[in-house]
Image (cartoon, rainbow, N blue to C red; front, side, top):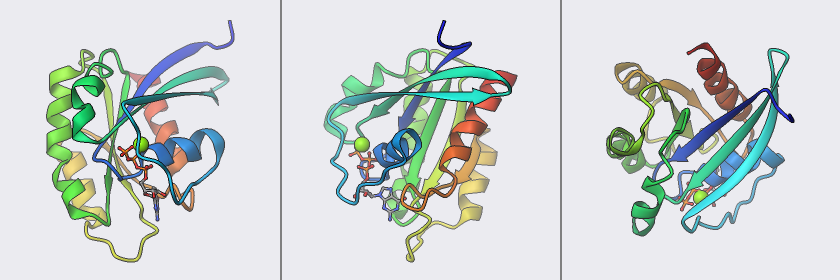
Amino acid sequence: STHDHLFKLLIIGDSGVGKSSILLRFCDDEFNEKQASTIGVDFKTKFMQVRGKKLKLALWDTAGQERFRTLTSSYYRGAQGIILVYDCSQRSTFEHVKFWQDEVRKYSTNQDAILMLVANKVDLPDQQVTREEGEEFAFANSMMFIETSAKTRQGIKQAFEEVVFKILDT
Ligand code: GTP
Ligand code: MG
């Protein structure tokens, strides 16, 4: 076999928070200032070497736009890790995190799914959500937390590594 473990990860959050950009940075080490909004669902794979094991990650990139909601909800099934992203330069996307959590409760069939809250776009000068607010929300809701920038690479690799370590330890 080409790998020791296959993990299904899902990335969710409002449109424009940078979900596709995070995956593009993680998988291909690229960044696109004019990244196109996702239509429906995209799929990427990534191999990772962790603790001497070869992992294959199946990464499902969902559209944040509301008109795709019915379609994207069917992809929650069986995900071992869910990455919930907000844009720390857009307060409304942080306020919608509760909405996305409800979607997870409704559609994720895996009780043990690992949840990671990601504050993306930390590189931008005008921050509307503090790190403390993000951390507090994550802690109160049993989620992991990390700040990232798909643009500068900050936290990107670490976000996936931490999710994978947690899945391996659960
Ligand atoms: P949908 O597919 O519509 O759900 O959006 P998305 O969450 O996939 O967002 P996308 O990756 O398309 O990024 C939206 C815009 O934000 C693009 O113009 C990106 O270049 C930009 N962007 C994404 N991540 C970052 C970041 O970390 N920093 C900065 N400055 N811009 C970012
Ligand atoms: Mg997208």
